[in-house]
Image (cartoon, rainbow, N blue to C red; front, top):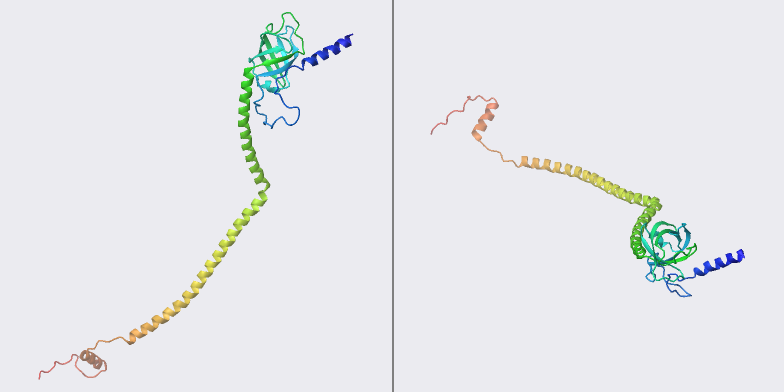
Length: 260
């Protein structure tokens, strides 16, 4: 009998899990749509989600909720949520405050349980709860926008890393390429240097030949200048000096000219 009751409870819990989850109406076949890269899906209302009670305190006011959609990680302590018990008709939802968040779990403190649950009735574990939270939708939107910025930063970092990796992987090739470039410039400078030195040597040889030729020309010009020099003639004085120098007996001074 106990075994049959246990089977019945498992069936009842499984039937509750087939509630009305807050998912878009997707087709049975084919692709549901392109990948949105983990951003917000405009077809989904993120202010509504479902979870299952996995633990509770004795008073039934503190509940630990398991969720398959881990968007509840954006909850913060003190956030207000509203929920209804799946397949339990109620005019108003229950109100609760978030106490803590874990991976695929979050804990709430129920402030008003009688609005969606009969007073005095045992609130057991395993109930599926349909939650509503405008704050969660806002947090999901902010997280999606922030993720866009993070992806842009990641792309920038990946581009920088790619450039660095490319440099490191091609370091030896770039080293050889750079060395070859400067070797080519060095060889070009050496060629220009040798051409300049050879030019100076050739100019020196030509200058030596030109120097000798100019000196020869100058010597010829000096000889021609001496040859074509016109001398000044003072015959009496010069003649007296020449005779005096020859030792002829003449007075020391030339005599005065006689007047005719």
